[in-house]
Length: 337
Image 1 (cartoon, rainbow, N blue to C red):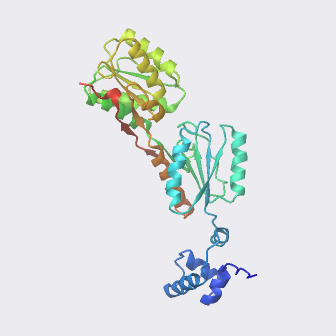
Image 2: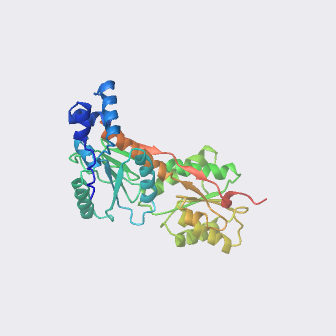
Image 3: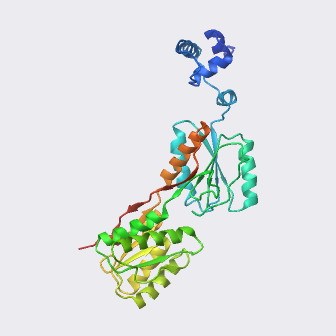
């Protein structure tokens, strides 16, 4: 029986190239401390031996494991999954693996998951909150770089990236103004959410800049279709002249559209409607399809990953970065004639 040859090791490459194991590792990992002639000799030796690097060994020699942790409190995954997809797009180019853990909004579970990730020697962490309001920092004693995504840290020394909800509200109002709507109402969600207030602020600012005001102070309630239906009925009873509705979420907008149809209002001819979140399963299946503000969560995830890379490389950032939203125009604001 023919004995299978053992795969070449880093020591074999170093021996053939006439260099130390540490120098061979630095050369294969692209470190700047290695002379070009030495690097070429190491690469030729590795090619001659058909050497395949061992990721674990590379990690031990470089001090990095090529893994990062993504810790979320978003139970449904509606926000964390697109953020993770964006992060993996950025990490994929560098062959970095992502460990995803769900803290389920529980502080004790978060600490447990955090310890589990750190025990795996991850190179860094991305912390994704369940809502875009400030959350408690993990603190300065964490041994790896940390980036906060969607929900910013309450410590200005940390780096956080979140959606610009004021900008999102402004985009919604400017779009309705741009299609000629002038009697605009605002229905949004839970008043305990900073994002709800920010979206109202942005919309009100855009209306004010156009010399207008909302037909009535914004209605705060819940992030649900039932609230959207009830609030729309109340709003139209007092202001039947309304020709545009800004809704703080797509769920609210779907309820609002149901109420408008029940009241005999054509969408968008009589009343144009804009939602927020661009939750496609709701927005594209609405009747008509719903125009909505997209928080560009995949881009947010990519940006978080890029900033984590920089921090791992010794170039950390600080403070809060707000990512602009974008408008997805569909039938609820596109006139049919």
